[in-house]
Image (cartoon, rainbow, N blue to C red):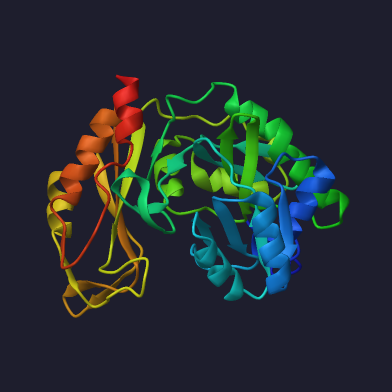
Length: 338
């Protein structure tokens, strides 16, 4: 409606946004475009679920077909838990498990031209060592020193551009932010999921490294002029973000707990580290928790080791009763890069 009123919009139409809103729709688009992804079944009954789980075997990957605030996916070796999650969904997608590290790649598109950003990696499990339940993301880092330098170009040509071309062919051109969640498997790159927006927490580290002004990039996408935009400029620095979550996250989070130390971060750590608010609210003169993932601390440095040190030093100043965060964000990548 806004676009129809002649106002430039950064973001896809409702039809194109189904790429995120329905995993079954995304699978259909990928199949038509020849995009590599996990084999899957769309199931609507308990019998179909049981048959699909049996066909793929453990570990089981069960996805709610619709949006579920980052909690719609269960990956488990427990057959009963897989069936229970499926039973709680109206329609469910059962997939084969994809091995290998995961990579997040954002791209900006005007429906024809696709401009990829820099890749990042996020951490979905709640606890150190990738233990605990799946979350919306507990931290992220960029760049990926272990990734193939040709990865972005490969994903552009095998995933992003074919997907954008297929949606345009269907009469639902996708304009805005296209996010590809990828698995780097032994058989090559595979798409795990698409999102139609900047995703948290990877956006924090990617935009921390972007030197080209963001507003001009978004305007070029909104007005169909991406092809005329000069190449994006990036900082050589690394960036790390650490999410501070509330007590009991990703279950029902406790809210209303006071948060202190924010002024100390602003005074002692800026501009190398800063706090971005997510689940917070003002309560008089105090800031209190108001959601599951409460805030994230993002820091930059000459490499991942320095960025990690700065991020965790700032996290250490923040006090939230019952707050939790992972202590190993980017640790493996930083150690391997030394």
